[in-house]
Amino acid sequence: MTDIVTTEQEVAAGAVGALGTPGAVGALGALERRIDMTVALAEIDKDVDQRLKHMSRTVKMAGFRPGKVPLKMVAQQYGHQARSEAIGAAVERAFGEQVRAQNLRVAGYPRIEPSGLAAEGQLGFSAVFEVYPDIVPADVAGQSIEKVTLTVGEAEIQQTLDVLRKQRTTYVDAGRPSQKEDRLVIDFTGRKGGEEFAGGKATDYTVMVGGGMMLPDFETQLDGVKPGDTKTFDVTFPADYHAADLAGQAVQFDMTVKKVEAPMLPEVDAEFAKALGITDGDLVKMHDEVRSNLEREVKKRLQARVKNQVMEALLTVNPIDVPKALVEAESQQMADASRKDLESRGMNVKSIPVEASWFTDQATRRVKLGLLLAEVVKTKDLHAKPEQVRAIVDDFAATFEDPKEVVRWYYSQPQRLAEAEALALENNVVEWVLASAQVTEKPIGFDELMGNEA
Image (tube, rainbow, N blue to C red; front, side, top):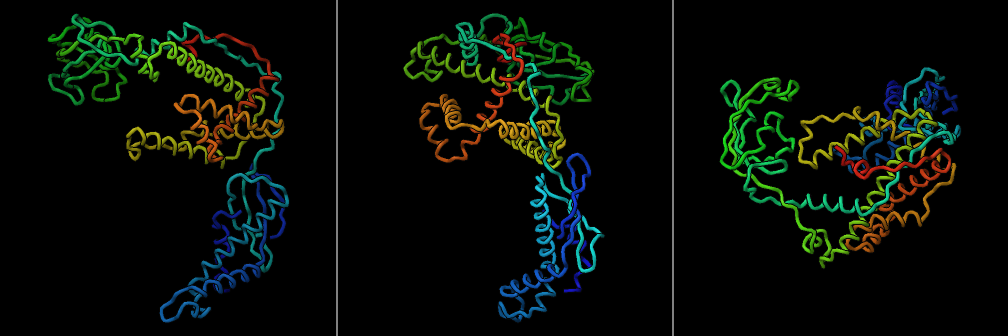
């Protein structure tokens, strides 16, 4: 096999997934390391011979029965492949031995490079790789955390019922000129310099008065109209309008009003209760169900706000470097998830570039928190307890028609509990931080918590 020896350095450098002789670990940066190692060529030659003999048992060549192809011919055709595999295996084995011997926690895959440090009869190579940071969770006693509070009362329940009523709004003929919140059906045609322009014409177009769907100059023409009205008016497009040929331009619209419909909210009666899933239409049951769901949602949002502050506190007191390989992998996962989300919305992702680099900052934060939380859980013994996981699963299931069946579904396959276990871990970390940090409680308004503020 000596006719292939000249390619050994190239093969070693390209050993895909490669993870000798003991070598000192050199630090190239905060987390980047380098190990120089050697592998005996005799060991590689021995492995090559074994691989070729194994191949010869099944390899097929014209003129020979399977298993009867001369070893020399097998070596001529498959020698480079066998040597490449043998070198890759030797590199991986040597690197693995060094990692275990020096108790290194490798992040990602190493980069294998040829090395000129080998003696006669040896193959030299270097492995450049990253390691996980050593983390000793810092004290959070000096961190201030604001814990917002809100108790669900009758006012919040009524406000939620109002929202549910608006979601089920129907429209009837207004019988009067239009006003805010009415729904119009209109035809319109836009002209620039007397010529119709692309995207400026519509028939039977539905628009809400005061809904902010149209440009401001157009919006003002929707108030006080009635069916049969026609209008001609000027509209000036904003300077930053997305269509360059219309940006900052003045155009003229002709509009015809076909319908003016007023909103009609449903009454809070048995039919409304049935629409919310209360099969017998009982209003007391409906009220209790709304309260229960609202309390669950408020609790979730309050916890999310506190949890975000806890995570920021952990990041503040634990400034750590993270492996680039982990950040790149997380960025790629986030980009892939974004593409799938766009596809689920019916968008053609081929025409929408989604770069992993867009998510670098978010990915870095996620990786830091993941490493920090894992270390805090380990050092402070904050592992999820079975009863904590069950409580979270019960909470998941509470919103379904048959909670017991949902619970059975989760527990039928252990991997389905991963989300609940992760939440339990996070909750334990939050409680640990809150027990040490400086916590102050502050009431929060319902609209602010629910994101209803204008």
